[in-house]
Image: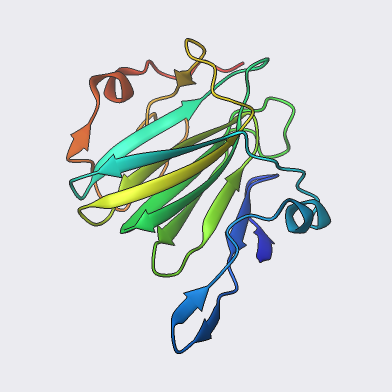
Length: 177
């Protein structure tokens, strides 16, 4: 695996290194030792799948505040998404900055998102599946979010959403920590 920093402190792009032969390809998606060697101690406790039937479905921007904060490794396993990480950590040098990356199932790349960073994505193709590896376990009732189009963040989405939940569309304006 190859790890590359992004514009947001602690958010890493993770690229697989597939081995190919006549049968196809094989690649590691997560290895605790390789993550630790890259300075990312990450041992997922839960794996979740988001299925999205329509192109331009937006999910986000979600996070869980401390003490229930989550760390995530996110990748498209079918289709393609524009994936966004937004730094909501007041003590971070990149507070309120965001980074976006196209995650394509055919390429296999992922985005590592540390605790305190909100996450969301916009599907770019129909029938897109997004795999989440999460640590620690999700704690129901502690989820939070910020609005995907809040001017405080000025996230440059590649297209407007055509499908979005009422909850995600209705988050109030960000007021700071």
